Length: 200
Image (cartoon, rainbow, N blue to C red; front, side):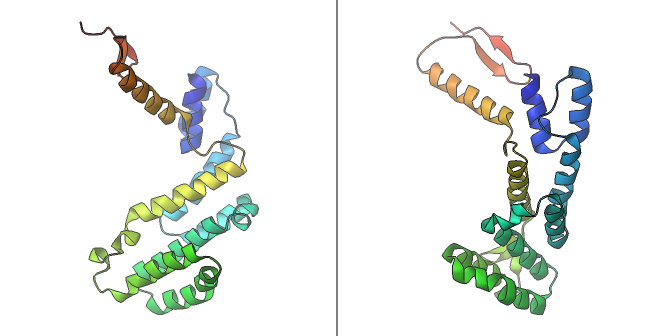
């Protein structure tokens, strides 16, 4: 169980909690905890809309990450375009889209569709309520940051998703399946993991 908790803390980037948990439980993490700080700095840069800074930081960590993942690089560049649009830099946004993203769109039809959706933001005065306004939502930054975080974890030979949430989902699914077929001691309180006897 301790390894699952450590896996969660490392994967999600809780470096201080991982250090304290390591001291208290004696559980060793799979990777150097110092790399978590670097990874979280990259993630935070994207979440704050500082995409150029994030690209620079990820290249400092491992330049192959963006070289070997054209979809991730496109999404970072798309996020950079979104940030230019968000800040009202229309001319810069158009120039950036034309020079950096259009050539990638010519190579990949899916990229072209995403580029067209992003550039469509420029056609609306009220970008928040337009049909593609969700691109300006903070959740778009989070999506891009998560994709980048997963790529960094993969490059460090670490799982990109923590195991604990998946195991809890499997437990809930298994219990739901069993509910239809049998009476058994069930875990209703996932926080305390206490078994409850079946109601007869």
